[in-house]
Image 1 (cartoon, rainbow, N blue to C red):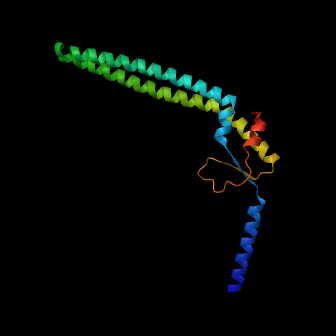
Image 2: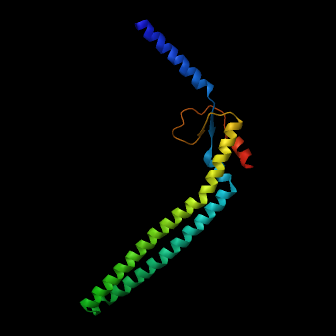
Image 3: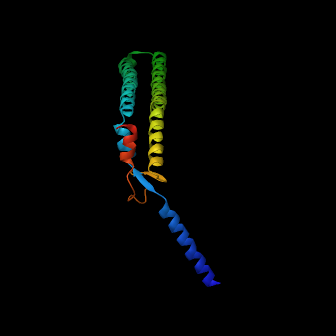
Amino acid sequence: MKKLSVLFTAVLLFVAASTVSAQKVAALDVNAILNLMPEKKAADAKLEALSKTKGAEIEKLRNEAEALYKKYSEDAPKQTAAVNETRSAELQKMQEKVQQLMQAAQKDVAEKTDAEYAPIEKKFQDAVDKAAKANNWDFVMDANSNFLIYKGGPDATAAVKKELGL
């Protein structure tokens, strides 16, 4: 019975080894290719401009709130408790408005990022699929991934660049 078990294990290891060696694996530097794509450079520029615009709007409102706080703080000893309470509520509303603007800006940037990168990701994936089929690669792994176990296979970067015309 032990001999049969050992024989079965040996056959299983042989089959597994032959299956693994039959598969072709390639490494691909995803970041290098994406950074060469003109579409990504344009999307990055648009997103940077949007972020700066949203940041400027937030900063303007924040500066207005700080100036108002400073003014109200200086005037507080001269005012009645009711006026100071009203001003405090006004400052609280402005702070809430700043928070809402920040959340809306983050949402807008995230939505714009998704919209800008979706066609780029599709074009990239189509090029990877085409290069992998043309070169008979069974797997293409990101060369920068922490999950990459072995990086001795063919490099798919040049083939995907060729498919993208880069």
